Image (cartoon, rainbow, N blue to C red):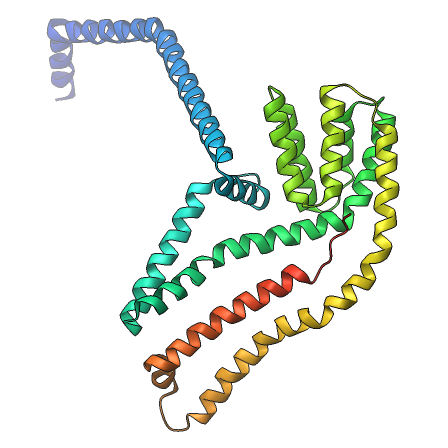
Length: 329
């Protein structure tokens, strides 16, 4: 039986099978040859497409940045987002989030209270919360900059002298000595923007972002020093030493200013436990009644809850903003 099947296979192979084998071999050879001939041009063409896409994306981003800088409000939002969101100045996404929050709050309040003016006021206040949170994050970052700015300038002065008055390598050496990750990120963004700057406009734009992030006149003076060193190749060692001495003098006045704002800051933070205590007190005062129904299903109680919550948020944000005096001129 086995011999019969083997004879049939050899008969098929020498009759038709050998032609199929030749066809398959020829087909594979043609495919392999075409692959060799077409692979290189296709890869080159694909690389060209990628390069054109990157150039187009760069041009679009550059156009967006120029347009953003042309408008004062958009310029402010661009700098704010770029300072606190890891170097990303995406104003459009921020405006979309703010607009969605306004629409959602307005739809909810107009449905609950059927009062256009009240709904509009509450919606505007609610839509300001994302902006205030960014401002609060910026304020925290500026506080870190103020606390360590003297050390940064001192380290930069030392490295500037050690690196034969080369500002770029001095900045690189300075960021290595910064322990705080957020401050190091600020310096790395500055170094990266300065390295990528192709003209004076982009150089000044990088300095503007750094000055806005620090938010002090000391940073503005340091930015001007960096520009002079970059554009005019000036020796700015004596200017850095003078700036260091002036910063040291102003630090002595900070403790007295902190004591003046302590009461205001404490009052701002105290609204949080008072608000929570009022909710707990209302829960126990409701007795056998449904507290959730009394608090959220009644028009006036829901209105007071909403206004109180917004007031607490604004109070805490205000306390955060004023609790740290600036080491500035």
